[in-house]
Amino acid sequence: MAGVGEVWPVHGLALRTTDVELRVMTEADLDAVCRALPADVELDPAATTYEGLDERSGRSAIVAQGYWRAFGTWSPETWALPFVVRDGGGVVLGVQWLEGPQFRTDRVVDSSSWLVPEARGSGLGKQMRTAVLELAFGRLGAVAAVSSAVLANAASLGVSRSLGYRETHTSVLEHSSEILQHLRLERSAWRASGRGRAIEVSGAEAALPFFGLRDERA
Image (cartoon, rainbow, N blue to C red; front, side, top):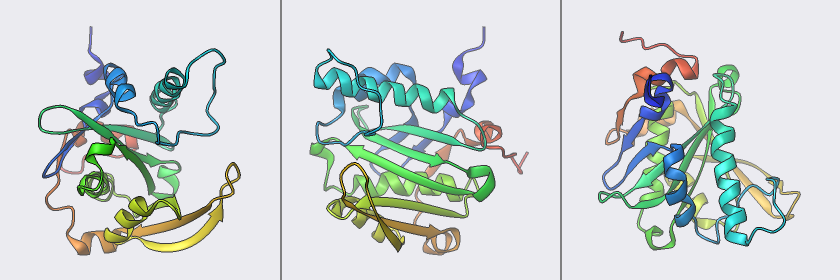
């Protein structure tokens, strides 16, 4: 019987930076990811909650359902790809998402991430975003990347600005009334910057059909 890596080669995608490795999350990773999830990471406010669960169990349920939803509803038109971020010793440091909500139509990607507290402030967030941007603009042929963060999230906005994103507009979050800053990075600016040259991408060719793409080098 074929293994999941054979029938679903997206799980073979791996990205390596100077200090961390990003591998596509599998079901086997969920326990470690949920244990590492910091209490201050805001999860989807629209996610289902369950009476009778303590806070940590409830947050773990949201994370698990988010994973299953991502792969259960995957299509080349709309996809969401979670990576587990680990250090050289295999310790889970965080999660990095890359999403293409209308990818076949507009070739635009979005991203989000979190890190454990002890890994913050060390430049790893920038490395993680750099890795998925190089995948998006390189192998996947994205034309632009967008990002957003509340004005109080200086770390996320700082990563975006340092990677060349430009502010476009603001909006207001309905559930909290916080101001959300939106930013955009064009493919031409990314390629001209050369920031992705140090990123090692592996396993992309076998996964391309799941993004509606073909390996032009084949």
